Image 1 (cartoon, helix red, strand yellow):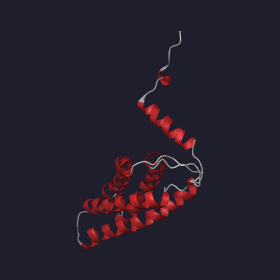
Image 2 (image 1 turned 30 degrees about the vertical axis):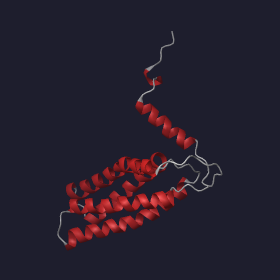
Image 3 (image 1 turned 30 degrees about the horizontal axis):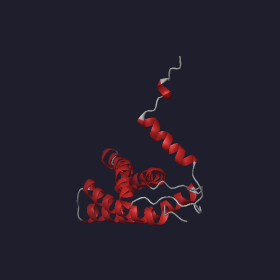
Image 4 (image 1 turned 120 degrees about the vertical axis):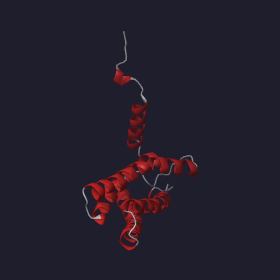
Length: 166
């Protein structure tokens, strides 16, 4: 009797893990001569917004815990939250959103961080204006900064970091 064990059965979680693993294992070079079918921008944007929520939750959650619970300085809390959010965002964008395949993940990560510095500065300025200048709520200021960062990050990722180079 060939009974499949519970681990051998195809579950939605196992399928996602297998797909991600396959995407990483099948990664080609950045300057590949093969052309892949073009995917619509709307599909990428929808994936970016849906999966991008993960990095926003990491960023915002870390900021909230550090600023509101631990009472850390808002700028220090924002730097830590930004770093963790960017790290999650890199892997989500690379593997899931843009399906980017290359052998230069470290170089891409450096470029990803470099472009995120610009949106970090925008978010930091938004927090400073909101909290220090306008005496507004820190959470509300963080939400405005996150919105501006999301828009900027999508544009920078799509057209500079994970651009398909043929």
